[in-house]
Amino acid sequence: QVQLVESGGGLVQAGDSLRLSCLISGHIASYYRMGWFRQAPGKERELIGSTIWAVGNVDYADYAKERFTVSRDTAKNTMYLQIDSLEPDDTAVYYCAAGMSYEYWGPGTQVTVSS
Image (cartoon, rainbow, N blue to C red; front, side, top):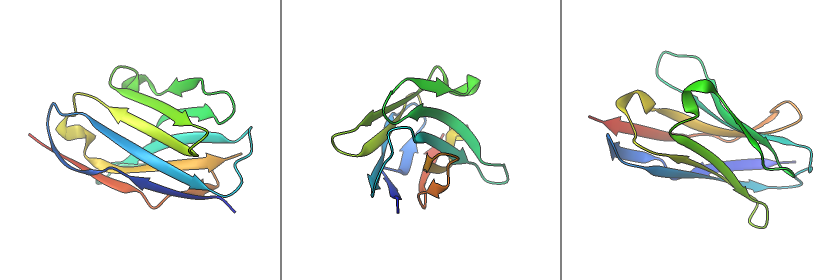
């Protein structure tokens, strides 16, 4: 069983940077896809970026290519999401997910950006 827990969210000012962490416990298969998602109020959940656990190359959604950076530390079983130049529209619950088809999800961490 794989469990994921996000941390690092909170209330920030526009223009700030933030790094979210996703601690993963349980067996992580090398071929698992790992992803960061977000869901803003009244909107559908959307993918930010994803990587293969053993490989590390990241595919980003078009909107995320400039200000979002996904990374992982396999020794710490942790995945990170760096968000720079935060904007009020970045206000959302941020989730990490893992698996062959993202069958494992964390509970999410709230990020609120004030203008």
